[in-house]
Length: 158
Image 1 (cartoon, rainbow, N blue to C red):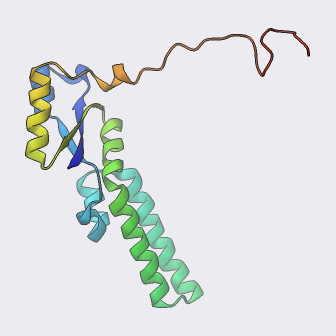
Image 2 (image 1 turned 90 degrees about the horizontal axis):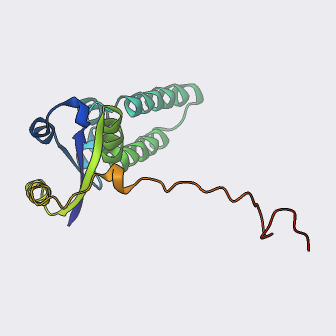
């Protein structure tokens, strides 16, 4: 079974039915398409920051390869490592890009396929078992005790 992160647009962006229609399900795990064609995958999913990082790495690799006279095997291995890195991280980057665009993580669903994930998410949503992730992940109020270290009271000495 795979995990799917469900991203919904912010509440300010429209009514609830419209928000649900714009839901994005991002499967966790390795992306074979991002592995084989990383630049195209990043373009299609509009992950601009990492697209520019990957393109800068490719240009630097070409320049260093030609200036230093690196063997083709070294350049090929560096390219394969880059592709592996993108394949491993692409879906995570897509989730971060969605958050920068105003989406928020609403739920994480475990399912075999995308259709099963959608069914489980909307079924749980209909029964109102989902609490917004922002409410679940709130930090507790910080407490200031005024004491740092091992001493139980301010100014106490051993």
